Length: 77
Image (tube, rainbow, N blue to C red; front, top):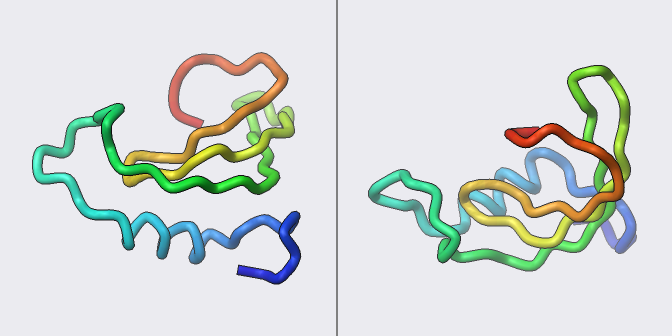
């Protein structure tokens, strides 16, 4: 990653992190899945095209945890 702690990781960097985490045999989403801390700024684009500022919390093989102030519909982003 970049030396700047506030820069966003690239998509390739996030893929490498996901690949480095062990793979699940059953493919189910588990809250107990191994997670790595990841604290970088992020943006979420809604279906309507609005942008919500966020901060990442953690990353696992199932996705990225985000903290945000804004209204989002439940589901994948």
